[in-house]
Length: 288
Image (cartoon, rainbow, N blue to C red):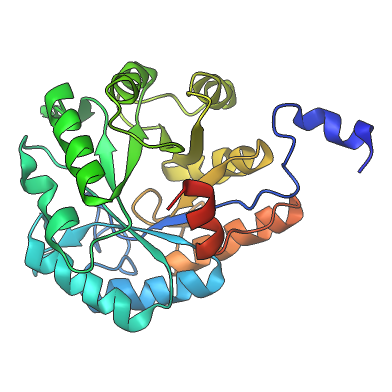
């Protein structure tokens, strides 16, 4: 490849060779079937949709659990049901359990440590988040340190969810305490209520502020998902799509499935000359 063609990707010299990791967040803990009847909530629904996502090119599954009424739950038994269903329906996709929630405590972490087999990774929300008018998730430094230490001791890779730039010092603290192994797996989140505004310059700034040993993916909610994840791929980063973040395929058109969103991301990666990561590629890139 000529020097002229590679110049626009200064700092991303391996752009055309480095596979793009596609994560899919199928369910989430907020909107449910009232927002999109195709959103999967129960284990068999989740696993069936995920199998199609894996076939389309997703290599990481971001998993939330719902109870029988569709409400978010941290029940170990419900996460075990989902894990069993995934193992029955999918071939080799990496499994990532959420630890998100509004109450402090290690009960949010228990599924990632007690389900068999353990997930490949689990999230750490690095700081406070506001939801609606009077609800906030605290996510203290003490909790994050506990989660990171227990994940390190149990061989579960943390996914560091960075909702605003004030969370970056919390990541640096975990680095300095030797609670994270390189490469650090970071999710940059855009468009949340008190998160980073979904603007292109903010994606560039957020990436520039990450530690050198970081691998990062872009998550953008609602209408911001398509443009910012496309931009992330063009920057040499990775992306997360799925109905947790966006229940629409186009304006006024509900997504038919999570696989439909993954398929579009794969087409975009192909147009941008980015190979799509297999599960084995993902393990190599993330040091798993």
